[in-house]
Image (tube, rainbow, N blue to C red):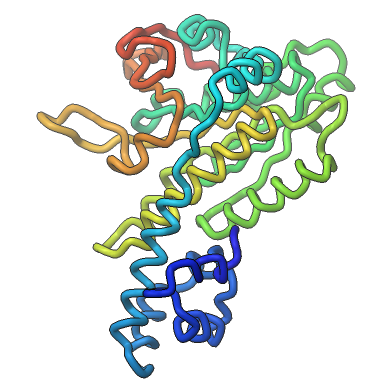
Amino acid sequence: MAPLKSLEQYPAITDSHFLEFCASQGILTVEDFLLHDISELAALAEQQPDPETLKEGIEEVLFMIDAQHRQPWLNGMELLADSLQNKHVLSTGSEGVDMLLGGGLREGQLTELVGPSSSGKTQVCLQAASNVAEKHMGRVVYLDTSNSFSPQRIARFVDLGTHNFLQDVMKNILCHSVFDIFTMFDVLHQLELNLKSQLLNGPRRIRLLIIDSISSLITPILGGSGLQGHSLMTSVGFLLKKLAHEHNLVVLVTNHTVGGDGGVPKPALGETWKSIPHVRLMLSRDRGNNACSVSIIKHPSMAPGEAASFTIRG
């Protein structure tokens, strides 16, 4: 995150008095600001000289953080060359999903799986993790937010040859239990540092990052009318897309559904989040059997509504 002092270009709000107030609370960077309890910060501002200016500064910083996270203009030829040379397609191992997506998940993109409980989201995540570790010889980072990671199910997806081969596949899947958004920020920033220093690169570099489920971490911070929760959500999306693009990763996240117009299920996390994923897929399941369907909600090069099917295993 950028140092908070970089906001001094807005002297009308973020003047030296505001920066000194933030520093007195241990807030020296934009990340410090977002991770701080904003309601507590506003209450402390009330006790300072000129509290209204300080509270305006708090609101303005939140707006500026959101603006800074918008994607910059990029040269189209550079994007095309990068896509052709560096952004490969990785098979998920699920024939229906791969067929729908023209081969699988594309590196450099954030793909979201949306669906109610037991619709097959975790199945796709586990199968993709197994397939990338086995067939693409890549490492997988799996952030498990709801105790859904199952090494036994991973093992069922592997084409068993020898016990040592299964061990090699499992060693390439790095699982972290993450139960709040602040811990996820810590893990993602550490991952970014490792990728930059190439500690986890090499013949078997990290190719897939999975968060199952991201909505379980974001939903609790969206309550109330304040901007802090939405700013944190935007920051998460920006960081995930940055990791995907700069390090040629597939980022795969899951999201639950909520009731929409007429009771039709729609993705959770609202209007702000829906612009963040490059690809959004809706999953559903026939409760009478293990048949699942997957359809495109959003895709940069495919029409919404196209659908395919797959079967729950294990």
